[in-house]
Image (cartoon, rainbow, N blue to C red):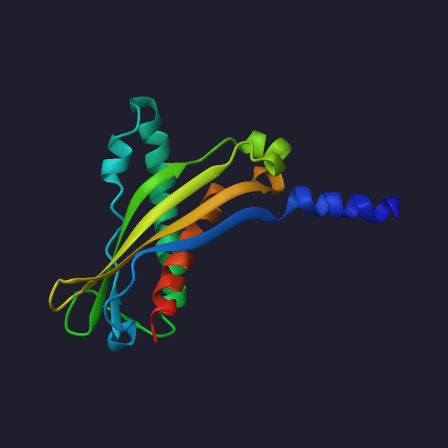
Length: 178
């Protein structure tokens, strides 16, 4: 019995992550998203958020956000490519997916490692996703993709939050695909 307990503790410390992700609809889509055949996803708008940070944090956060943005976009596209084709330029039948970094707090990895079960060192990421019709430019829907990291092996990974937000964006689109 004692050996099994150490194996479980080792698995917890080396793997696993207390990262949960979900989306919160702000405006449910006004049209069925199944009418679109392709998706155009421009880069995430994060410059305003980075500029709002204190000066000493801007270089560090901008690197993390740039890496996370590409991971989020590739994760979202991995799911969305099942039903949609990619569009380099928006045109008829294209859904434009604009993302904006609303909140990013990386938390404290050491606190998550030791006391994460109690909520210490929690990290949080919120990305607002706006959907537009490429033909008319009209807004179609809007949601916040939210990822929270509470605990995890070696303190968990902040990059995992970006990956989970990408999955949350895809889940929002699929839930209203009809």
